[in-house]
Image 1: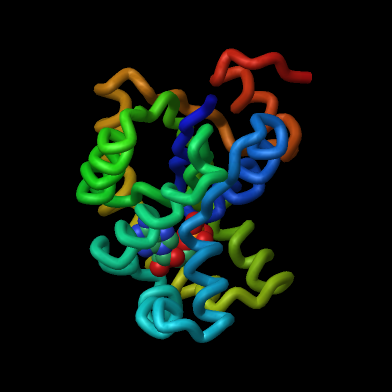
Image 2: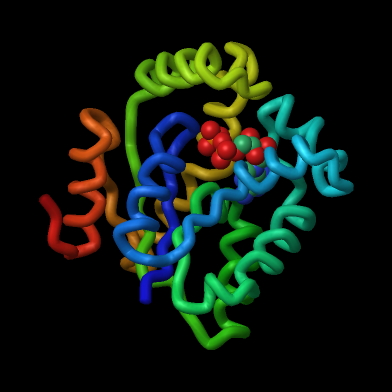
Length: 191
Ligand code: ADP
């Protein structure tokens, strides 16, 4: 059983690593950003609500995000554990996640922070914009997202460190090398 949160700035590689860890650990990777983007693409009601926030690089309001994650974590595949990628991102979301898990008699086991310097992040995201055409990968929006992360999400590192749950891992280098560092931080065997 693994209940794991991945923290880190936009472009740090959370999504990539979440998928690799998911395959390795046998628990689902749950990405709030992916779920929001899928809803935008399918033009659901949720998608219509969140589109303006995604396009601007701002956070979706906590009430909307919390309700969505609550629903997702109640799906059967998350009963035995999960990797959360992109949630929690605010202190209000930290409290909500605590409540959701508390109600289920569960608790968070690990928080892994993936670090990288801002220049590298902006370079990667600009590259991804060219590859994938994500509407929030334009230069202005990339800057906004980095700033929103610093203002609203970076403080969570301290919150989880105080709980003794946090391990920080260098996100620079080969994808497989970063995965190995994450597995090592979880005290799991790695290549
Ligand atoms: P990145 O990590 O590159 O910023 P994500 O795919 O995780 O991208 O998120 C994309 C967008 O989805 C965010 O900029 C934000 O608008 C929205 N989003 C994702 N997770 C959350 C969250 N926990 N709270 C509020 N908004 C979120």
